[in-house]
Length: 114
Image (cartoon, rainbow, N blue to C red; front, top):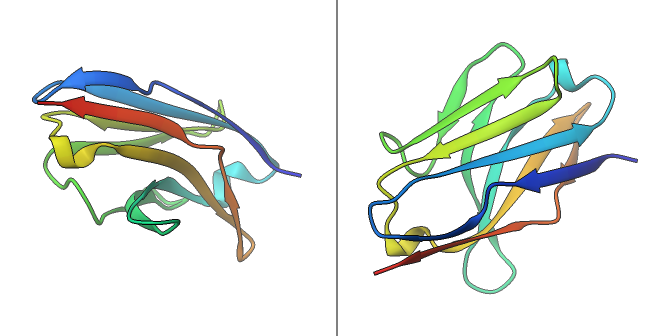
């Protein structure tokens, strides 16, 4: 069983910043791809950013504003978000791909007010 502890969400004004962190209680974290998704209309989720075990990053949303990083010594993936916009408001979910299986965190609320 893989469990995640997410933190760093909250409410900010347009242009503000937040740093999301996710600590995973999982084996083989260092050789897993990890990242963040966010909820869109209905139950659907979209990829925000991901980082592979080798450090390659993929920014599907927020390129130039968001930065994803990982700390394998602490089984942690972080998402630094700057210049937040109202459309960034969502529930953000920690994500991990381990051995072809996907695992999800419980979700953390991010609210950006105009």
